[in-house]
Amino acid sequence: MKKKIAAVLLTLSMVVSIAGCGQEAQTGGTQSGGTQSGSSSDSTGAENLPSDGIPVPEGWDDPYEETLTVTIGGLGNPQDMNLPEGDTLEDNEFTRLYKERWNMDVKVEWMAVDEAALSQKVSLAITSGQMPDIMMVPNQVLLSQLVESDLVADLDSAYEIGMSPYNKAVLDTYGDRKFDTCTFDGKLKAISNYVPGYSYAFTWIRKDWLDKLGLEEPGSLEELQAVAKAFVEEDPDGNGQKDTIGLLCDQRVGGLYNSNHTMDPVFGYYGSYPRQWLTDESGNVTYGTIAPETKEALATLRQMYADKLIDEEFAVRNPNDINAPLAAGKCGIIFGPWWAAYTLQDSINNDPDADWQPYLCPLDQNGEFKTYQQEIHTYWAVVRKDFPHPEALMKLQSQLSEWLQPVKDLPEGYAYPYRGTPADGKTIIPLNLQFSEQDYMPKEYAALNEAEEKKDPGILSDVMVPVYEARLKYKEDPVANRDQWSGYMARTGGYEVASMENVRVAENCVFFAMTDSMTARWTSLEKLENEALLAIITGEKDLDYFDEFVSQWKSLGGDQIMQEATEIIKKQG
Image 1 (cartoon, rainbow, N blue to C red):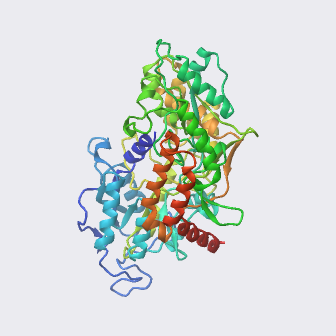
Image 2 (tube, rainbow, N blue to C red; image 1 turned 30 degrees about the horizontal axis):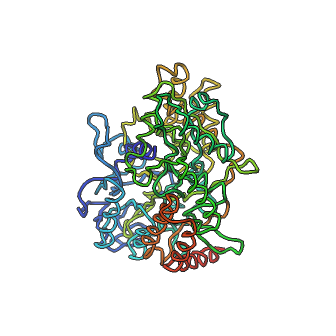
Image 3 (tube, helix red, strand yellow; image 1 turned 60 degrees about the vertical axis):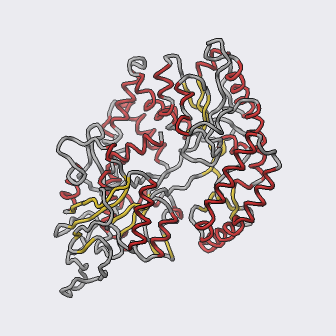
């Protein structure tokens, strides 16, 4: 599903790109290479005018008096484009909308086809000192290097001038985390996407197998293990062979928010949160993977693997083929988020009896499901330091966010006459930075239910209407519309389970930034961590190797990173 979501946003975000790094583009009278000195006034000496002589609009929703040209570099694959005939990267529904709305010409300077290519593009920009007016950034290390190289603009004033009141209200729902990875020495240097909560993994089970074997729906970890054991040993697919397998497992094992096949539900049962930076009782930052609770969870996972309740081949299975047993009908339990239904669609297509259902499981002794909050920032956008109009980034983002809102009810006084209405996803958007309220899922779930109850999709935004229609289509005839199952189940059962009141999110996952030592040492530390978790679960190393791993991890830089993170947290107050 991560790929499917990316593909949707990708199709919606193709203006972020074009081939050919380093080409020059005229941008409101300046070149996009970043070699021209910035100024608060133009060459004529006119007061309070940017260097290109184009006045900054007074209101966030005011257009430019003269046409402003903006170049963008970012993420997008031409093979995923599906534009209407005659449309191009630079002439399409959204570029025309930006021209009409803001008097802004959006031009693409380069395109990175994937995250690795984007990293190369940004690295080249750092080395050469030349970049587009607005550029996507894939990680915090490169963002820090851009700031240290003094290549990007301060955005505090641009945010106040150009960001819509609605967007500001959305970002305010994140409290102190709003700009925690975007601020350097007290100055806003980037804006990021905002990945909201509710994308933690829970349990998806083939209910038809439960029914066939006479099993109850599990709640506790012990009950879940019993179901997994029955699925492996009691021939639930009825072919007379012992060929069904246990839980699929990612080779990185855990700490993989917004991912399938992570063992996070088992770790969470023990109060363990691998790969998360946590504060202890003294307010010091520690690392979830080295906690004693993680050793407890590994003992259970190790035994589950020995009992074949976890896929015996997970350590050597090609990551690209990890879902093959699902499509083949050989696996009946997975851990995954609300959108895991999309991963299960092939199973539904291939087996008319398959009935996958989501469950909030395993629950602890208090009947609670324990998980953690994720890093909400995963992509960033920066503005070239000498670009005269950094507020243009905010205007572009304001338009995108208004189009993506799940409901049409906007705050009083929020007049936004333009709303994108792309047909069949055949459109493109300049930046794929999605803003969503922290509590978007309950609101979206409630809005879909209300629209269905009232038979009134008019309360939904245009981007949610196809979801509503697919949901109705599946319910009208589940057999004929089986290909619509994933969209239906993700936004009914998936949403419902993810929003349950007995989910307990750890409140001490508080550090998501980079430290100086992390930049230099993290690659080797992460490799050590991945290998240790894998070796312990598969039995290659005994359980007590965990203590050796912790000692080694700390001595190779982990202690220094935790100290630096603690200083940052305490400095922030």
